Length: 317
Image (cartoon, rainbow, N blue to C red; front, side, top):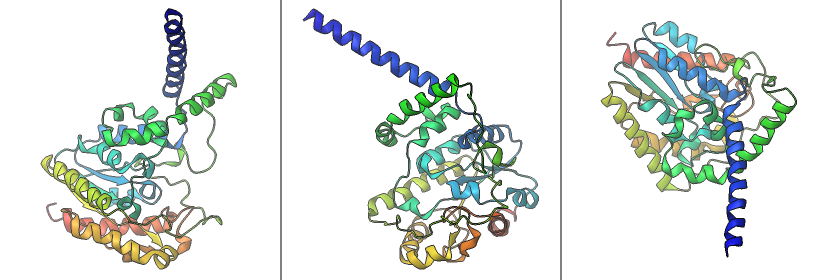
């Protein structure tokens, strides 16, 4: 029996050492030029902004598809910050990133893909995100832990890749193309792709928008309202804006898109700045997915946002 216990202790010790080593390497040496490394820059701007802030939050469609210089020009009394990165961080965590640190005068514009009302898109990239934002560990909702645990193998895989980078003296390899840390501007917009053209591999259908779980859609409405109430208690305002989508996506998924819009219109207790149909853009306005806008379209979308916000927050100015 003693021998068995000793063998179990030895085996567990080896596993613990391996796990500790993987975690140390994974979280201790994140890539400087990774797309998600921009989370550090966004966090710094968010924390060090003086005066009221105009904060954009949402998924990658917001990161790729805004021209915040327009907002900075139209609202000079605000520091504009685009906090968005990707839907894979999960909608609860995207809200949690800012909700405890809002202050009087802040304005928050929330823009999510229509799939927000369909499912929680949290996936393994959240582990990568945590290497740049370890403070978000304590804000992780208990309901999201099972999803991350299902993707825990990603840690070991990435840990091995970090070892490889270290052993080959490529600790921080270059990230070619527009999707990297250097592709963001000072406001937090990804702009390196804005002068490109639509990729030939782009797929426009909204096949992944099903809205079969009414309980989940209503839960999203409930949690979005809770976020808005908490912001209001801090002296901040929250607005919602529907995302831009291609004409092909609208033609294929109009009924489901309108259903997702209905959840917001009937459920949100805070202002909505537009409607789904007016955000239908030509297919060639998109870069590599049906939510990622190219430069001219990002400018038009931001101009619309500025126009609608002026009628809401401009009157007090």
